[in-house]
Length: 188
Ligand code: GLN
Image (cartoon, rainbow, N blue to C red; front, side, top):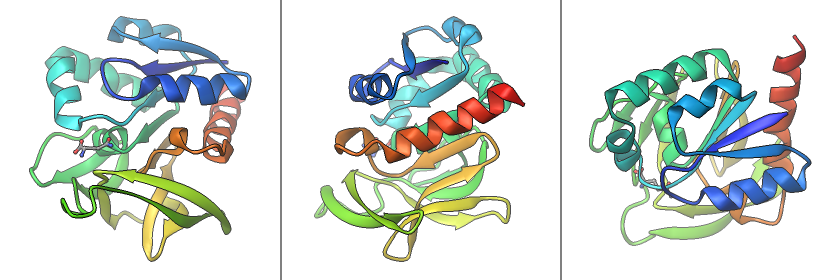
């Protein structure tokens, strides 16, 4: 399985490490042309507005085509990019997941925090950094993890999103979940 990690900015290298530990062959994607040869893609955290600027209109179009065809996992800023609607401020979303997401929703006081949530019913550490909050979910979106009452890992079809940074915890369950999604989609 060849998994790309979008490496335009942000914390892509921690994702590379996690995925390699799980046995995936990882490609750091610097140009959208490199997407063609991949089975799946991780869009890391960073600054979603910067991603949009760096991708430009043609890069965004290419990314949009990819997420329609192949499994994609967005974390934090990556989750924002996958949303149907983005608030605070409003910006373009790829619409891969039927959700409304609010950027920097925890305010400046709690810029970042480590909290415990539940992933498929089991406790898991969650590292939030200037995290967005999922405000509304469409009926076809499955919630895989919650922190308190908030959905924090969701999936719709082949797109998966986490509002926190699973790559920064020593727990590979969420990346494993994504690799299983890729494996299942590659076979079927
Ligand atoms: N606040 C960032 C944004 O709005 C996301 C932060 C992150 O990816 N850690 O895009």
